[in-house]
Length: 180
Ligand code: IMP
Image (cartoon, rainbow, N blue to C red):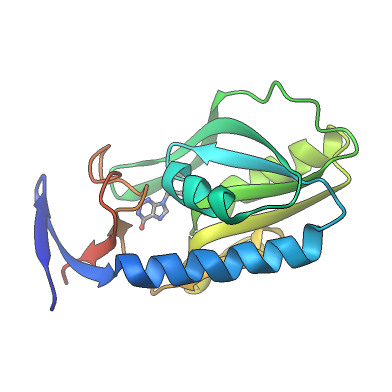
């Protein structure tokens, strides 16, 4: 059954259930464990949006791995500003590490396009993106194409499971999309 919720001035409708999310996280965790079994990857969580996906994903990853986080921001309300501000910098030494970026959503790819060269310049052995959601139609930068994707979605604004509208709705356990 479709559920509706009101967040500030906007109405959203349910789009991806908790059960569907759980199955997608299982799938992605399995792919990563296959590909990185002997690589001791460094998971780099992008705050705030990826916190819920990262927690669920990492509970399922049983190969040796470490975790670091940075806080990036490129959105204001429902519009991308086109510019990425690094809010909390990376303190971890990434030299020689196989990095898996954990992102909530890849939209235009601007955020990842700005971050990946920086990680490579710091000496990362490899960099891949693992994102909960992707809007393939919105992608501008080919180097921001994620290797691991929970769900591909239409080019519509979504909230929940870490994703926010003006800071609200990150705590919702399922995904809602803007009502057309
Ligand atoms: P990109 O740099 O255009 O790929 O945008 C990536 C960032 O924009 C994500 O990490 C989110 O924080 C934000 N974002 C993009 N689309 C949405 C959306 O539909 N809902 C909430 N945040 C979004």
